[in-house]
Image 1 (cartoon, rainbow, N blue to C red):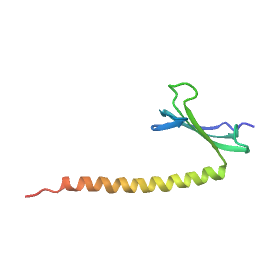
Image 2 (image 1 turned 90 degrees about the vertical axis):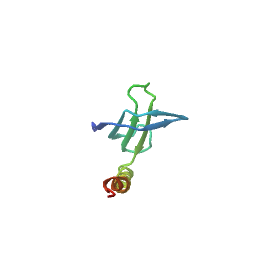
Image 3 (image 1 turned 30 degrees about the horizontal axis):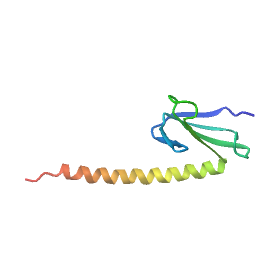
Length: 101
């Protein structure tokens, strides 16, 4: 049974197929029965460039548990990256705010 659970978002980045990298235009997250993995229903992540041929995509099928673990890892990495970016910005901004008399 198809679930019709699909989320599509614009994406900036690069994906790799074979030896070739291509720019992304969107990412699709879906929950449905597996097409390739020997599993039941899966979360599918599909990264693609809508302006290129249909093969310009990189996709994975994950169990729901693996998708949850990936979400948690992404949340931790994003939080750490945001902290890092805030520190970098404050270091670069602070000297410009100080004036020498």
